[in-house]
Image (cartoon, rainbow, N blue to C red; front, side):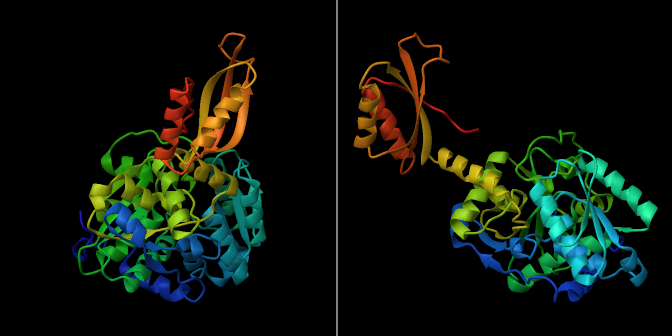
Length: 414
């Protein structure tokens, strides 16, 4: 389906006028993030790729838009009582930041399993953080209890027309900057962002295709639209869109205005995070890289199109980012761990090292294993981490080792 003016159903909970009004409210208090072409990613994917750098918002995510639009529409009485939300991620920080800026008390309920860095960042924006339950569902239930008990206004992370309208301002800005965009490729968690963007696309007066992207491990909106029952569970890199139940309002909008939802693998998400850092010199979280992951994994679907991709967030743990980058180096052949069988006698390791030197491959670490091995007592396993120029260079090293009479295998990343 193409999202056009003809499909802009007036019975839907958000209209283009709502999005335009939201932009008027919030535009002076958010970052007008750039929409820039990526020549290199365009060459890699065969599409004309424009990136919207929402990771450059103050809290490093687009979530500020919907949170601020909602806060600005509260009554003075509601502002005085304060707001509450359940979130362990970008919604928490966006709401906390703008509530503090506006003088509105904010309480954020987070699961007890939330990383301390996210708790600290949210508190740093002036919010009161309540840790409750081990899951988001438990935190959400507690937040609704506090809402009823203390008179707070609950601000939903995605299933609220004011939030959806605020998120739709992303698309308004993209089309102002690049009017020729004919396809939006947008991550879906609960569906707030894509609902707002699809509302804008439907009112553009020309065909603009809206494609959603979900992680294979959490295909909740995909299930809803396609009447499937794929499992929603697992440790995904894209935790920002790891939502088990999409919103009711957002599901209605997505069903009416979104053409298709594609699923992406964890490997594609990792590669996309790595490519954006290497090529665009920008840090994104897993959810923020989902659009690019879709262009890479479903290349034929987008080839030849002018595509707008939202880099929706940049809040990724630095240790996790380091792991992603190292795994990508391993897959490309630039980093490797080789398992080599040796004879346990003087000079064995020296002779192997000579081959590495001859092939100009850098040795990073060497691990010996004599005890915990199935080899005979005089057998020895050496695992050598090394750095090559590329896959072909690594293959030449492995070939040279085998020509030298060594049994060699490579320890592959997942």
